[in-house]
Length: 134
Image 1 (cartoon, rainbow, N blue to C red):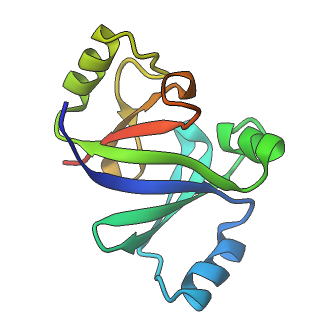
Image 2: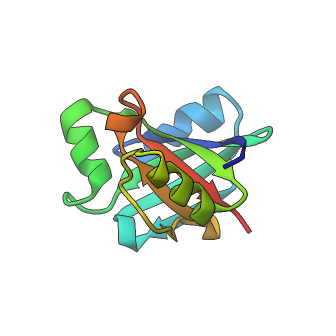
Image 3: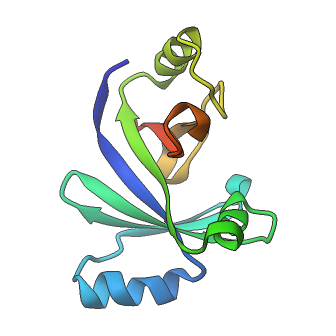
């Protein structure tokens, strides 16, 4: 597995519109894309910062993992995503090393990325997303 860059930092928010007031007006970082990811029950907004992005995540349902995260921990950093060249190979390598995975096969992520999550029990408490972009 060869991580190439921090792809993005996911931040759970109750309202993207409210959060953007800080990011766009306060910091001057413009949102370049919004997308609903129905499978994950979220709306995402991406704010590029050089080679990485901030991803705001707003739940669309109380059953969303992001909604449950906010209910338990409040708004804040939800996950860190690392980009890899070959997600399937990265997952196979981690599984062979005994790393606990949430996703053993890739799934669809925002922006057309293939993604998979590594369980926080294997990462020192951090939800880690692996991302492969075409």
